[in-house]
Length: 300
Image 1 (tube, rainbow, N blue to C red):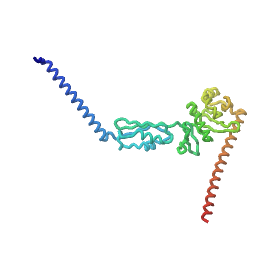
Image 2 (image 1 turned 45 degrees about the vertical axis):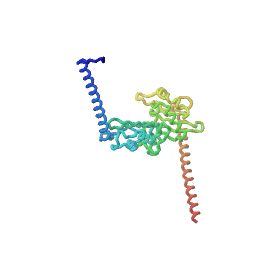
Image 3 (image 1 turned 90 degrees about the vertical axis):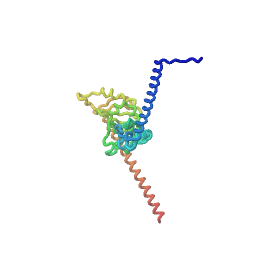
Image 4 (image 1 turned 135 degrees about the vertical axis):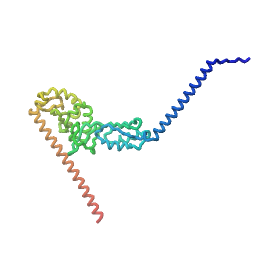
C-alpha cells in the first residue's frame, strides 16, 4: 500500500508564507534591476552626464588656458566617453610638464592635476628671464616677467649649465632658495670656478665639480660669521670653498685681490663672447655675399 503524507494546517501555512516571501524577493530584485537600468539610461542620455566643470591645479610654467586647450574638454562631452589617457598625453607634450593625472568625478566633474618640473634657476636675457628646469631643460620661449625664488644664472655654456643643474638638484632646497645669483668665472688655474651671491649678503666661491659636497654645510658656516642685532653682517665677505672652507672679509687685501681678479675674468669672458658673435655675423654676411655673387655670375 502506498504511504500517504498528511500535511498539517501549520505546515501548509508555512509553505505558503515561504512561497510568498520568495516571490516578494524576486519582485524586489526585478524592480531594482529595472530601476538601476532606468537610472543608467537616464544618466547616459540626458544632460546630467555632460561635463559641467573642469578643475585644474595652479601651474607656474604653463598658463591654465593653454593646458585646458590641450585637454580639449567641453560641455558637449559626456563624462563617460572621455579618454583620460589621451587627455594626459596631450598635456604632457607641453614644455616643463613632468606628469598629468586626469580623474572623473560623478556625476559630471573632471579634475586635472599637472605636475611640472621645478625651476632651479633663471637666465636673464635683457628684460626677460628664461627658466632652467631640474631636468636640465632651458625654456627659451617662456619668459618670466620677474625672477622667481630661483637664482639668476650667468655665463654658463650648455655643458657647464648641465653640471650646475645637477649640483642645484643635489643641494637642499632651502639653501638653493638662499642663492640670488650664480656666475661662471673660470680661469687658467680654475677651469670650473663659480661665484654665488647669497641673499644674506655673503659671497661664495667654489669649484663646480666639488661644491655640491660642501654647499649643504653653508648654514652652519654662515652662522659662525658675526652679525649685528638686526642680523646684518658686521663684516661682509667671501666664503672660499675652492679648496677648503675659509671666510675672507671684503676689507682684507686678499678679498680685494680676489674681486679684482674675478671682475677682470668676467670682462674678458664677455669680450670673447662679443667677439665670437661678431665673427659669426661677419661669416654669415660673407656667405650671403658669396651667394649673391654666384647668382650674378649665373645670370650674366
